[in-house]
Amino acid sequence: MHAEGVPLTVDELRARWKRNAEAAGVRLTDDDIARIDERGFLARVAAVEQMIEATNAVERTPDYLDILHTGTREGDNG
Amino acid sequence: MADHNDVSLLQRSIRDIAALIQAREVSPVEVTELTLREIERVNPTLNAFRTATPDRAMQAARCAETDIVAGTNRGPLHGVPVAVKDLMDMAGETTPAGSKVLADRLASADSEAVRLLDEAGAVLVGKTSMSELAFSPGSNNAHYGPVPNPWNHAHDSGGSSSGSGAAVAAGLVYGATGSDTGGSIRMPATLCGIVGLKPTFGRVSARGAVTLSWSLDHIGPMTRTVTDAAIMLEVLAGHDAGDPRTRRVAPERYSERIDEGVAGLRVAVLSDDGAGPIGTAAVDEGLRSGVSVLESAGAVVEDVAIPELSQLSSLYGTLLVIEAAAYHERFLRERPDDIGEFTRDRLLGAYAYSPTTFVRGQQARAELRERINGRLRGYDLIVTPGIPHEAPPLGVVGANTRFTGPFNALGWPAIVVPVGLGDGGLPVAVQIAARPWLESLVLRAARVVERDGPWQGRVPPRIA
Image 1 (cartoon, rainbow over the protein chains, first blue to last red):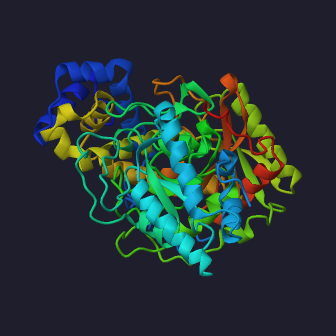
Image 2: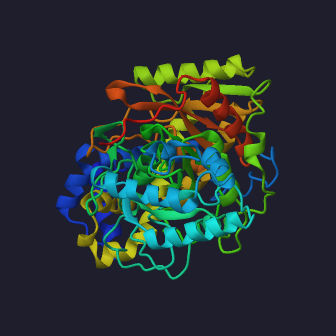
C-alpha cells in the first residue's frame, strides 16, 4: 500500500516479495514466484492489505490473543 | 461376555466400551489387541497411522486391566484405545509432524495432551498421519502419502488431522486428538462423518505439540459421538503452567450436561458470509435439517448475515502464513528442498506481505471480532456448514476453510456434527459455535442434532 492508500501494482508486490525473502535469507526464485502466483496469489495479497486498510483500525490495540475481550468467565464476551 | 474377536466392538462409543470395560465384560488387553490387529490390517489401505505404538499400548492395557480388577476406576477413558495426531510428542517416539525436516525429532517427554490421556488411563495405540507441518486443508503429503476417505477411497479425508479423522471413522480407535489452526480438526471430521471439536483458545494446552501458529492453534478431540467428544474434552481441558496461552477456567463435566437440550436458546443461522452461495445442495440440505432439528427441540432460530466472516477468513489466512513462516523459517533457509513443494510455496507466501501487515492485521482482527460480536448480540449459538462441499478427490487440495477459519481467529469453541451424505456417498456436517468458554452449549446443541437429526450413527463400509 502506498502512503496515499493506493494499492501496490503486481510488479511492485513481486519486487517487495523478493526483497523480503532475500533479507530473511530465504531462497525465492522467479520460478517460485511464477508458480505460486499462477492462481492469483499476489492479487489476494493486495486484497487482504486493502481490506486491512479499510477496517480503519489503526488506533486499536493489536489484540493478538483476544486478551481484551475474552474473560475467563462464561458470558464475558456476550 | 462380549466376543473379543468381534470387530463391531471397535465401532462402539467411548461411553459404551468404557461401561463394558468397567463391568469387566471386555478386557482392556483384549480390546487393545483387537485394535492393534485392525490397525495392522487396515492401515495399508487407509494410511491413517504414521506409526502404531504397540509396546506402549499393551503396557498401558495391562496396567488398566490390573487397576480395574483391583477396583480402581480412572474414568471413562480407562482402558480405552485412542490415538494422537503425529505432531504431539510421545516420549520415546519421533514427532515428524508429517514432515521430513522434523523426521528425527525424538521426544524425551510426553506432550501435555498425551500426558493427560495417559493419566486418565487411555491406551495410546499410535500416532496418526497428517498433512506436512499441519499446513494443508487436504491430506496431501509429499513424504508420507495421502489418507483416503473411509467412505469412498477415491476421495480425500481432509487435513490436517487426516489420519485421526479416518481412523476414528473407520473404527480403528474410539477417539483421537487433532490440532486445528484453520479447521484441521473440523475439516477431516466433516469429510469423514465424525464429530470434531475445536475448543476455546486457551482451553487445552498445546505444550509439546509442533506449532503452526501461536495465536491460532487449538488442540481438541475427534470422536464418533458428541458425548465422546465431551468425555475427551473433560480429560484434555485445563490450565497448564507450561503453556501460557491456557487460562485458569474452572473445569466442567460436559458429558453430564450434554442432554440438557436447547429449549429457549437463541440460534443464529448463517445466511450470508459475504462470499456467495453457502455450499453444495447436500451441504445446504444438511444445514437446513440440522437447524430444523434445533428448532423442533425448542431453540429460537433466526437467519443472520455476517459479511465480516469472509473478511476474517481472508485475514486469518494471512496471519497464519506469517506465523507459520516465522516458526519454520530456519527450515526455509537451511533445508528448503526437504520441504514438500505445496508446503514450501505456502510458507514462502508470507514474505509477499508488507512488514507491518501482521500487526495491522491483528488490529483488524480485533475490529472484526467486535463487529461480529455486535451482529451476534443476543444469540447463544451460531450455526454454519462445516465446509461448503463434500470431500474432493484424493490428491486434490480442495477442502475449504471458509466457515472454520474465522472461529480460529475469534478463538471461539466450534464443533462439527454429521448431518447427511452427499455426492459420492460422502458426509456433510453442520458447525455449531458459541462465545468463548461455552463448550457446554455447543456440545448440548450438537447432541440434539446427533440425537434427532438424519445421521443416526452411520458408519462407513468395513474395509475388506
